[in-house]
Image 1 (cartoon, rainbow, N blue to C red):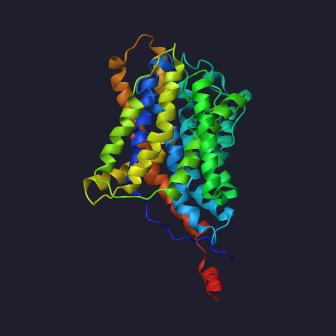
Image 2 (cartoon, rainbow, N blue to C red):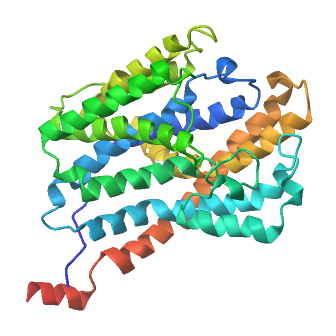
Image 3 (spheres, helix red, strand yellow):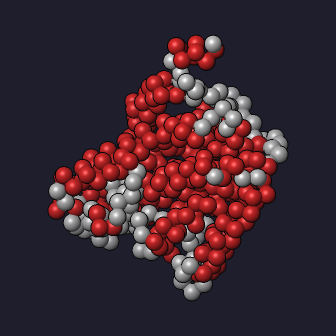
Length: 382
């Protein structure tokens, strides 16, 4: 029997930490989003670009971790490893979403109390598979492909990227990958400058328009990250975690550019950030070296919590957004205690899920699914 056990490469701790910084900023962005009226007045206006950063980071890490392993690994082995890494928290995100669903009944979503429990549980079970639900099965009113846990849409595209990589893109030469990066980058810029909104917000609904946005957001950053992992000549950079974190904060916090009259200006800004700034951040983060100490512990904590907080925080944001909608005219200053409780609640839930569920489940799956049994190892030796 073929072994699926592969030596684990060293991680880039600063990249893990930067993923955590971006995830924390996403939580803050989503909380503040409840007080906005449109894309134009969002606070931390470009916080949604974290998804595009995650896609680029994912392409880099997957290329680094798996590109040189395919002589000993099949696509099935790869899919198993990715499922073990990602899917336990997909399931937990849906469970948290189901537990919080009826607490979200509000002026924002006035029909929630009319949804029968069986239908909500059906959506939860479908969500366990990450298969998108059509808009006809929407139980919230936002046409999300995963109504119990909105951010799971990006995990759907993450899975698509993993499938494309394992079946096709991993075989591309550098030249072919360059061509794909250039073409997907051109498609991204074309959409941003001519798509009508001037931003990349979207991808969460299972319909042609939103799927187009999702694939446009996915292809350039994922392929660019993969190309970066194959071509970058890393150097040594000091204090990279601090400077890269500050750069992400600035990029996400930049106010909307151009307003409603010059949408192309914001599209130009987002094109520059996704095409050039995010690859630079990943390059700097991968080039850095971090010594043991406070910075190392911060990076580890942020890295550990990054995925759990991203995939479990939104049910709390639904509740907070519903509360804001029930209190017309409430300002952020008055709502600040509730916003703070939402933020720390998201951190606590994520950390509890990490320690009590995600790590134990992944360890169990690795022992049962990825590591060969003793007798299988003996056959391999023989």
